[in-house]
Length: 429
Ligand code: ADP
Image 1: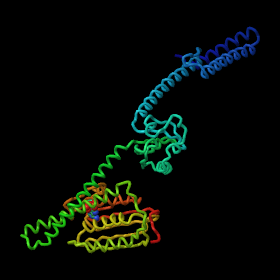
Image 2 (image 1 turned 30 degrees about the vertical axis):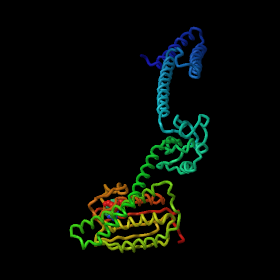
Image 3 (image 1 turned 90 degrees about the vertical axis):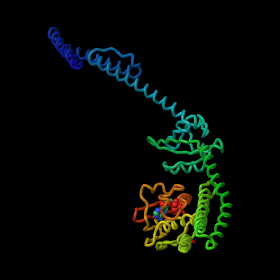
Image 4 (image 1 turned 180 degrees about the vertical axis):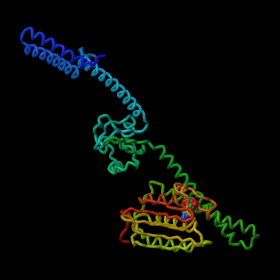
């Protein structure tokens, strides 16, 4: 097919040639040239006007007819418009499907624009957060007035989630998460965790009750076993060994129950953290003195470096329990010839405790699981523990807003660090 642009040019050229010929016959070449150019310009202006009218309002189907370049332009624009229409329909269908899917989600989903204004929300958001159609355009903080939620929104730490009660009912527990996306847009997702929290409470209560109930009979058994073991020299050697083992195991059971009760107390949200001033240097000195008095077969050497005289604001009992666990672990897993160093120092802007040892160390694959309850790297290694010590430390640190880290190399030793934030530092003791 001939290029329409070339065909148009050839027509103009031919028209001018004929014009010149006619002009020569009439003795007025300039006039005929003007007439031909005016007709040519008029033809284009006519089509420009049709094009304007078509694109500014006409439907894609009413394509104007034209020859040459204009026919081609009309055809291409019409094809482009048809394609756009198809794409728009596809997008609308996709959006519809997306909306239907999000609307069916059991979690409340709210799209927030800049300034935390509600742009859109799904059905579940109406049931869980009490949002209504008229709330669109409103700031979410004005509708969910929970201080924890407002603080979470302001903090903009999107790795975290926040637990809040539903504005509709005290009995609905929600876990809220904000996910940023696009330019200044945020997606708020609230999951109903009422059942989950209930199950957690049942489990915690069960562990607490069982541990509590076991305490009394165990104390009685321990009393009898101890008094029998005291008279071991009057018993045949086999019995004496058995009573000794029974004494060891009842002691172990007792520390297991104590640790379980401590852990349950720490996990309980109703158990408020004390905000007393804790003299950490004095506390560490005391724990160290007690540790040195413990009967142990092969003790490592122990040193305390107090580089800061400052203390902490928090729970004395909880901190004592966490620090004791770390120090006793170092003593438990190190052998004669090893060294354990406890350092209390500033770690600008906060403060930290390091319990460093030159003991056996822990292989990297075990490190992430050490703070799980009952997790022990090698149950046959060292004296029998409960596997709850580091879980307690982790909880106590979390309650104090501190970061708990473990660095360890097999054969070289381990460093357990507790980093406390500035607001926990007690300057005057
Ligand atoms: P446990 O009662 O078994 O000591 P913990 O929770 O205190 O329980 O510790 C979990 C595991 O971490 C221990 O079983 C032990 O294998 C390992 N561990 C803890 N502290 C040390 C340490 N200082 N050196 C080597 N291994 C350690």
